[in-house]
Image (cartoon, rainbow over all chains, first blue to last red; front, side, top):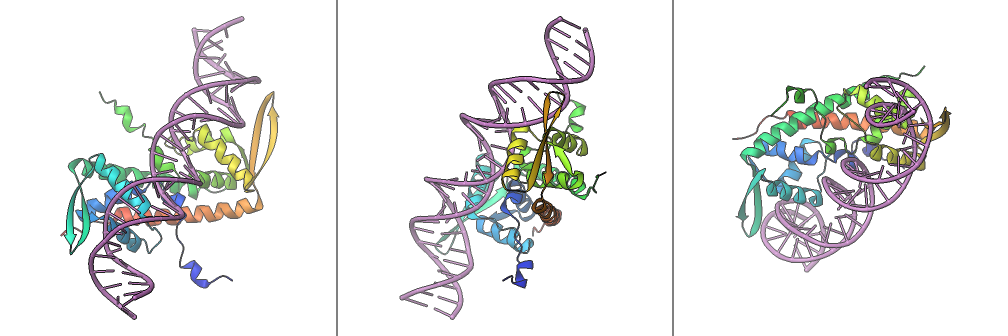
Length: 122
Length: 122
DNA sequence: GTACAATACATAAGAAAATTATGTATCATT
DNA sequence: AATGATACATAATTTTCTTATGTATTGTAC
């Protein structure tokens, strides 16, 4: 039996999100100066009405890769006894963030065009 | 030295296209009734001003997967001595095509919103 | 007439990026 | 005391793509 709530609870198939994660993270960091991992997952979930849910297995390796390539810097803080690792864009990261966002925006225009095409059948 | 032509010759980083290939193919087949592999690569290249180039290594395995899952049917024809394999959407494929296209369109709206967000810095 | 580019298929090895699963630990709520 | 939320991390596996390779035909430029 199909619940009517299914309509409200649509989550994008994971393959769609592939390739955009790094850009999403860079953009959030560009907007928010510094964020920690868990905060990023919650922010994305909130901003997308739960349609994009970043898993930890995807998030942390990506953050570490961004750090390794020098696009972000980190500061660790303790909230009580619990550790929190804040990420901020480096100068290179800021540039990269802009480039990645522009590229994705351009790509989406192209895809929109592709998807809007009307049937060409004879 | 940087050629001014670089500006005209931008090709999307391959990671961006990840996850959208199946949808692109289904959409083209929905619009064109039947197409063969090579034709699909050329059509996408043409429609996107060469910004999206589908490689054969990505295309054929995807087409075979679509066939295996019953979303497309095939007919093989000979043009002279050269073989050509035409792909058409099955009934299930037509439904899937619509669903995938809607999902991608929706996803892009969400991404557009994410990327358009203005700085929240204090 | 021959070399090269384009057409047209296919597959295999390897890389990249995600999923799924697991682990540790703290803090808040019931 | 148990559960769910917060917060990090990593390993094994899977998916999906890139890169490379292979075969063969057809058109075109020299």
